[in-house]
Length: 290
Image (cartoon, rainbow, N blue to C red):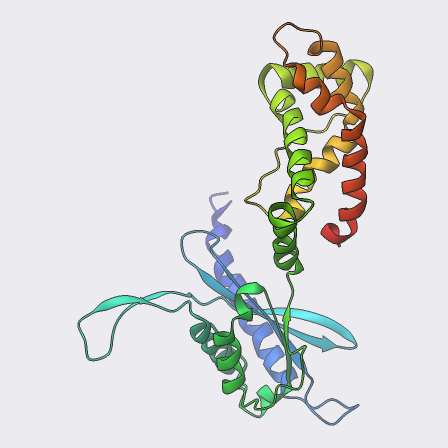
């Protein structure tokens, strides 16, 4: 009875034992020649830098085919930054985090964890990484470590996060294009609904009215310009899905009150707003959610 819940203390060791065994099996597989080609299997690597708690790690995953199916295997997540003393000096500073450091760390982990030699690394066919890894410092050092002199394969370093690039395009469209005023006005009108019904008394009006009349009423959100456009796009979708409840709640509780701003009526009830909202969703939905 006294052993109940004590197994949680053994769980990290259980995970470590499984990890070591799987790592050995993966290493053996990468060194075994395929029957179909007589050569070791090709593989690729996915890398990303993250700060899940206090420390920043670089997650490194192996992607390889087994029986015709791609599998992913976490290899390691070493610390990115280290506090070290510089050579021939008493100066202490933070080391790591630059493109060169990240490239060296990736190759070092592959060599140490999977016992891959320079010849074995020639079967590495791709690096999947986000926008931070597209810097020339990372690419140049990586190619140097892998002894790649001719960059004939444009898909060797693959950016997996199209959302980074797409967000830059949306920001440019919002701030510096001929459509800038249109998009900013649409955001302003949409934010007005969140201001009225996102919290407090307005939220109670909106939710209560929707419940009584059986209308769909999703929680409103504001358009956060600091987040990716794919996340902020959620605002327009929620307004579209809850449009009937939002507008009817406004008419019932807000439209004819003395303290209601006359401009708000045209901001949220205008037919042009509904048309613009639908048009923006139609144009952007495939690009933002693919």
